[in-house]
Length: 74
Image (cartoon, rainbow, N blue to C red):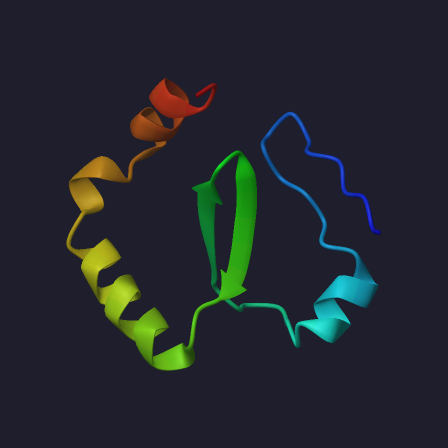
């Protein structure tokens, strides 16, 4: 079992043993899902990543420093 602590900014470091076992690298995109009180994390395949980044680019009106300030503590 590996343990990670969440920071005040909602960030955590995935332990190296887990990153290696899951073949995770810097820049990989992860999908997080909650089901029955458990968090499931999986790597998003590269092709799906391009699609989601394209969608994200169309939502710039919701991606400003002001929005980050408004929603930071949720």
